[in-house]
Length: 202
View 1: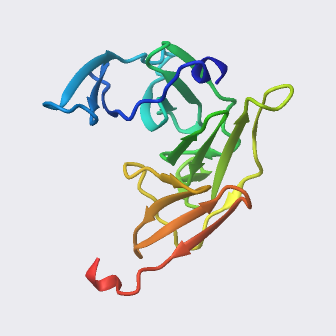
View 2: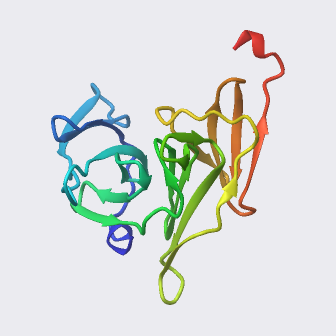
View 3: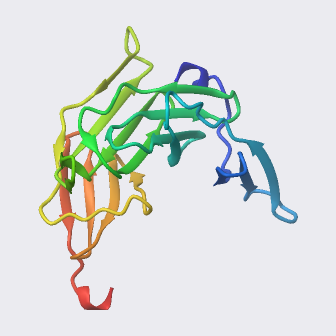
């Protein structure tokens, strides 16, 4: 986190991951002429053991998050493609299969959320809870910890491919069957559900 904060200013790039090719495609939307594309080598995580693999899961403010593919207590790796630094977070407290991941990086801190697909047995999953990792570079000493697990609303059905969006201290993600928007308030560690008024039109 400290090394990431040394980079300034933050530039408004769109990044498209091409993991199989080992690079990112960057689009500069501020270019006054034709759209400017760049190719940046991707710092793919090195395998940590037999069969260990990681996939891109989220991104925010220049940080990329890779999630381990193996079921169980997940490993989340944060990578800065500019500095080529890769930092693993402590193991996720809850065993999961294919959870949904959210990441929000700010000027002095970042928050990562891993939600849903709780492994209730080796052969069954349920969308029960979410785990949140909070890191703050301004505290003395700098801190990073997993907050107490939060409970997802009933009948939640998350799609890890859809990811999460972050705004004003809250994460947002889609839930299906029935359709709804799930909202996670970081300050209160509480989830809520926003039901669409006319579900048949979604």
